Length: 113
Image (cartoon, rainbow, N blue to C red; front, side, top):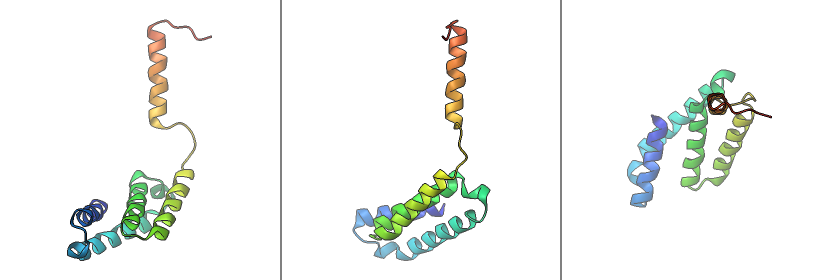
């Protein structure tokens, strides 16, 4: 929820031309997003979740939007590290696609050479 509100504040600033009117809510939700990421990174299991990656990418986008490209770059490097540390192997969509292709081939009696 905090991530969505941070992005909403950024969108407000882009439309209105200033973050001044929403500075306090922006900072509150941005710090809550940072806190969420820190808590998630304490455990290997939660560090690899989509929610954690979404929060990290939200922070990267937010920092870039307010002009802090150095911090944004650090978030993107952290995001890349998190993605690389994920277990290797097929993703669920890849497994589903293979299964679907196999079932279609079996149904049509296609022989694989």
